[in-house]
Amino acid sequence: MRLYRSLFARPWAGYVVALALTALVTGVIALIREFANIANISILYLLGVLITAIAFGSVPAVFTSIVSILAFDFFFIRPHHRLTAAGTEEWLALGALLVTGIITGELGAALRRRARETERRRREAVVLYDVVRLMQTPDFRDALTAVAERLREELELAAVVVHFGENAPLAIQAEAGEPEALQIAHLANPPPAQILSHAPSDRGSRALGRWIRVVPPRAQVFAQPAGHERLHRVPVYLQDRQVGNLLLVRGRGARPLSTADDRLLLAVANQLGLTVERVRLREVATEAEILQRTDELKTALLNAVSHDLKTPLASIIASAGSLLQEDVAWTDEERRDFALSIEEGAEYLNRLVSNLLDLSRIEAGALRPDKDWHDIAGLIDDVLGRLRPVTAQHDVVVDVPEALPPVLLDYLEIGDVLVNLVENAAKYTPAGTEIRVSARQVGAELRVEVADRGAEISPEDLPRLFDPFYRVRKAEARPKGMGLGLAVARGLVEAHGGRIWAENRAGGGNRFVFSLPLGARDHIEAEGQERDG
Image 1 (spheres, rainbow, N blue to C red):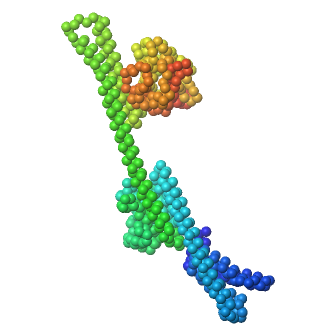
Image 2 (tube, rainbow, N blue to C red):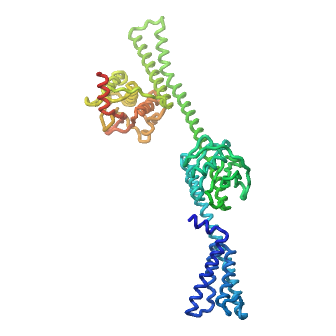
Image 3 (tube, rainbow, N blue to C red):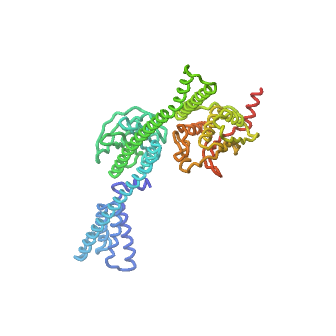
């Protein structure tokens, strides 16, 4: 196909084809006249004129008409083999053939021009559509590389480089093509620090040269020393400011880029400029959204802390102040109540601060569990023992099989998960109801469940239960709390490579379940042998 296009792009190709077609039609007419004498058989020459006009334009078509007249006169008008006519009738016939050929050639050439214009517009539309589609790729570097490769294939180039420099919102370069051709582009435009390439290439220094502006505007050819005449550069503009370049290197002996190619490249360059601006605006919008969410989180944190710190602090201050009153003779029972009030308030503040610190570590990505092998049954018993004052008004049921394997976990962090889940169940369920804590091995993971018989959580609230500061809106009771416990529990479980979720319980109530991956048994045995050793 390349050889075919190269041959037929030569200026003399149309005239050679005209002579060949004229000879072919002359032979056909001579063959027909051997068997029948058909009047106006010279009209067959119009086929050659039409073919030449459609393939090569009007000038070769007129040439075909003239050659056809001469051939018909030389071979078929008496006296034969002489360029003359016997009478007026023959001259009129030859003139009519010439005029008809010229008109046919012009019509065929016009049809050819329309077809080429339609093809050019179709090609531009397809390429621009592909560029826009490729630029939708989430990774901007991959998108630019795909665009470079698409242009290289479409224009049959040796290399294409898309370069955005210091004036662009993003300093980046992508390239595709042959190493030798890429070297030519690099000499004209040294790449920035970030490069994504389809082919290896060496880096060179900037070559000396001068700029020559050609038609259409903004399409420029960079004239450089010998070997760089294959380079073509199209600037990429954004709001009348150049932000980058399209560098195109033709193959050796390849055709120069046409005016239609220049228009296509200008359209692609314009689209690249708009895409860079869109990427920049998207990054600005993302940063603004992050700042807005951070500000909202800080506001919610301050509001929640200011509200939830007042009650325990007031209780602690009041109880401590009462104990310090020397003019009042408090009984031992009253002093004990004051001390318990101070202890409960301090424990609440301690859990609140611990949750805040854990949440900040989770959001900062600084949470690193200190894992070791532990028995989950012992951890559950330890947590429930510490929470006896919280669960005193509930019936706590523990269902943990004895055959459960040890689990690799951070004892304190998973203990905090259980504390938050059990406290949550105790706060949101009526006194006297059951709280069931169970553990099961399911495949290669351990599942721990805290189930209650409180009011069922609505389906729209279930997915958001583990969001920071989220409180169930339709809860019958509104116990104190900031809504951090479940958010912290999710962060701690996910840091262990597990997952946590909530669902409604059959027969009423809710289930909070988290899973942890189980270690390989041979690894557990190896750990045990090392400890025994």
